[in-house]
Amino acid sequence: MEKGYSIKSKPIYGTLVWQDHAMHHVVIAEGEGGKALLKLFQQKLPREPLSVLYLAADPQAEKYATTVQKIINEPVTIKDSQAELLNALKATLDSCYMGTQFYVAGTEGFIWKVAAVLRDAGVDDKNVFKELCGSLGRRLYCVHCKTTNENVHHNIHVCTGCGRHLIVREHFSRLMGAYMGFMIDAEVPGEIPAAEEIYP
Amino acid sequence: MNMAFKQETLRDDYTFSNSPESVRRFPFPFDEDEYMYSVNIEPHDAGPPGSVFEHAIDIDEHYLTECEERRIVLEDDHGRYVALPHMMDAQWDMVELVMTNLAKDYPESFQLTQDGDNWHWVNQPLGIDQKFVFGDTSTLPMEPFEFISRQVQGDWVIMDQRDEDLFADLGIVTGQADWSMAFDAGMSFKEWHAPVPHAPEMGIFDRALKYLLHLQYGSPVRRTNWRMCVNPRLDTSSEKWHLWGPDNVSVTAENVAEKVYLRVELQALFRLPRSNAIAFSIRTYMVSLEDLAKYPRWIKRLYRVLTSLHPDLAEYKGLNSYLPYVLNWLKPQDDGEVLPKGTQPE
Image 1: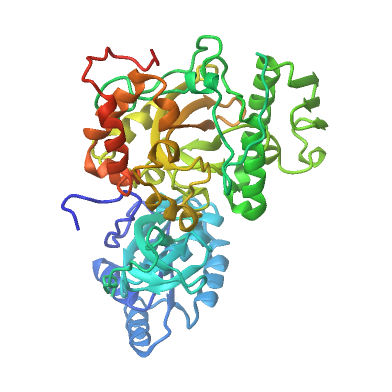
Image 2 (image 1 turned 180 degrees about the horizontal axis):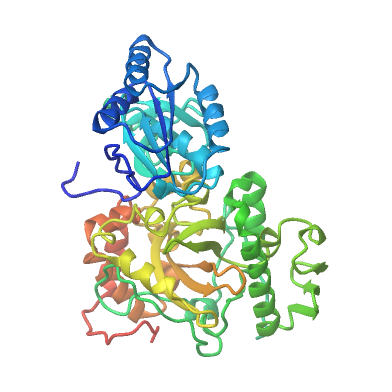
């Protein structure tokens, strides 16, 4: 990778920190994002109303869920599928007002699926704080056949939709929650470098 | 203007060609012997009669060709048209912008009658005669922006202005230079332009954005950008890279002059009155090296620009596969004459 080179559409994720001016905190996490939840509650247990939604689909995540529940001593909404969690989030949004701050922790795919639900509800993205946790696997949009490939770990990926070898371009769409993939050997068919696992 | 519209193809058998007049009015983009990105924005004022700047929206001999090309692209992939739901005011702004300008500047081809909100639009070259109620989508056969953008040359991206930024929330992009409206939909100004090498670090997009946020209604601006392409293929979209990528390696010393085109985007930006959005038109002109060589001033300058081009730009503009052939063909045509600043052909 060339020194100093970056594409500016790629999101830079931070560390979740309580926003003191909030009227209400909504925390949404999945899997390894449970660790970000624990870190957040180690900062403090906020005074303001709090909603916590957690996707726990494996034993490690269930352990995080149990610990979080003990620390905050308030009900935590725990779901074991992403669809259910996002539905629970939509229901929570019905009781949210101006001044609510949102905190999201998980894989990049999860973060932007949550962001899409929030956007549809009219939440401004600057009130959504994001921490990337767990897998660095990417969502990859094939610009040729429009398939979105989930959990892409290699810089060159065979599209599940059209079978083309796609190179992952560092160009990210927040609306799609995906990177752009385009055919690597369009000029000279078959000229395909070895794929490297760079998003473990 | 007495205009004969040609019916050509921009794909497959590529019957596209430029008349001598069309070559002469080509918006050659290089006013100096070296090129690097700059904001290079100027008022989009009326230029000399016959020039591409004469009217706010330029209609030329390729009008029918390009409208047909757009129809073909949309039939294959309607995702080239993107309209986020909050952009309906901007859609009607575009109907007004295009119809009023075309009717005013090309009255022999386009006529518009306005009686309050009852509008009557006649597009003679395309054989369209449409009465509708301005602001009432149900009175048009499709969304207003799609309706009118199928009747005008060039790609259009309508940028919504909010939070001190511009968002690509409406667009019809069927003849672009290797990007995808479907992918870039909803992006902020800097996200959208993120892949351009060096320009972000140079502050180009900071300055351009700051400038555009203050663009005034009635004072449109323009700039040019350029690229090259192999064959007069307007649809060099990212979507179709698998189709046109192979063309890049089809250039030889024998065919370079007829096969390689200098491709210039005349980008004009208009503030829209109802939505406060900005219409960004990207009108592409293509001229083969062979035709460009009719004007030695242009061909010498092109050689100098290409020899001094930053390697990252050459790569970004997709020239690497055939640039050596281009340079070899241009080199003997440059006698080293000192060329005064300016883009004029002679």
